[in-house]
Image (cartoon, rainbow, N blue to C red; front, side):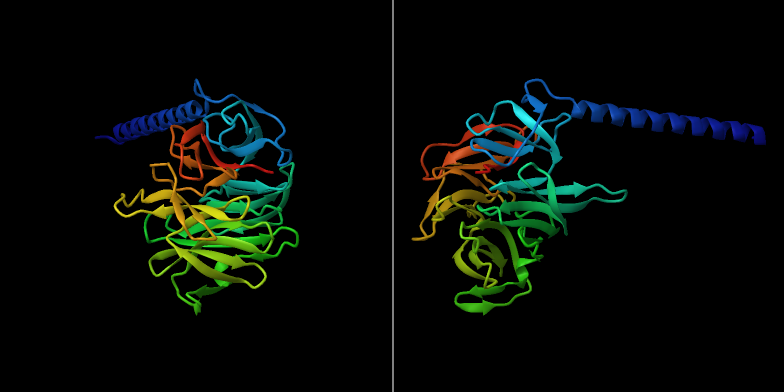
Length: 339
């Protein structure tokens, strides 16, 4: 083969590779455009003002494909499946109360993503921002709006297994004082100070007194409901096999997910309500495994997410164990009722 022939063969090969690369890029672009195009039958979404004040509203992360995917949207609480007003603010996890919101979001970089907790005012304007050391998992704001908490995976990415590690932070929104990890609190277990290298916390929920909170503590292969004291900086174990608690509006019960023997390892949970006065548990009428931190719609009803066609759908079920679950909204997650 002559030098000229070799050059021609090489040029031909380069042209083929360039054509294949161009086709691949165009194909990927077309697929991305198709994914972002609203699907027929999906929720109607329009841009508009979204606020964290005013009665009768529900705010959540929109998961419907289209230009508003992952944005916070608002709907009437009485019509959660109705038309959505989109805010243009994107969050992975979200919660709000009393005009304060916390948005856990991704910051896309040239090599990898990082994550950030953004504190919002009632008009969704940024008040402060804090680095999050891993993949966002849970977020909560206290009923008064004075405290916010968030949990991230810093090792592993699922609560279903045992090889994961979490970091849970609590922020005083008024002063800006941040506790980067609840692991700095003193743990009181069975009446004694407990120290162990395997301690993990997640799923904070706040009481109305701006002092008390509840959360999940994992240690020694077991999970516990703990009651925390923001002033004393302590947590005390109360009950075993409680994950992702959410305190009722009257502060007397927590809805939580509980591991049930005999279920698949990747779907081991059922929803229960625990009476904090009697420690009596009531199983709820949702038969599927729920990997979510439910919220209270009111004193009688809890709302939670389950996998759906667009990623997740929202369901509600009575908190007394009666009735049956009802889907209230599609393509939605991280609901909040900013009372």
